[in-house]
Length: 311
Image (cartoon, rainbow, N blue to C red; front, side, top):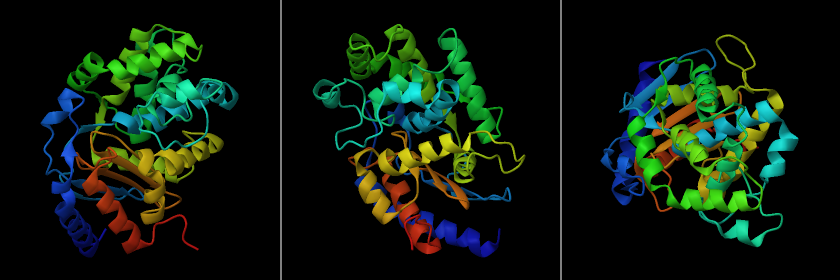
């Protein structure tokens, strides 16, 4: 990486900082309220193993909804496409990510896709394991392989905070249990899901995971196929159609990078065969996406022609 590249990335971070004041840190999970709203960071991982980074790159943050993509990959590897999509659908939704409306109005009563909360809960339910502890350990091992960081773990404080206040997610679970989408104990699944969302890492770790998805599921350092090609394609497709909540359409037009965001302020991007991107900025827009992160990705996409929809 060159000095010029470093300077360009630092300039992008500085330009994106101008929009931060238009957003707010998430408050519905109490433990997230303490995040610095002015923090902003980006890391770009390349297939040759080099990583370019700028901003507050050493801050660790929890994955929150970014974990939905990783859990989907693991559940598909564990159970197969037929089983997973018997429980959850393929379609985007214009409703909020925590909405219960579609569960009540469609038949059969199953979540529309794995990126909304109801769908993510149903998919988490499918991870193999005899109990919540075994399921989480398998997920954490998988995430550590993807990030190539054996030190990745979860934030107990955030997990506890989310578990104690997850009333709406419990409502979704009880509704799905009534309709046979899930069969396990609600509290056990809630504990697993909140730990999943509380897995924490830096932008560099997240960018490396993004690179795995960008490279067709292959670890660029070892050449090992960590995610089967077909499953990797499914995950990237959901990132395009549903990854940025109900702002996914606008994001596809403005940025055009398969991506998944979380309300902690993280966004993971995967530019096919080119780059993995990890950004962090806890100041969120009204849709729940990092407002500074969106700006950085838009600037990066324009500067380096990264949109997958370019002709």
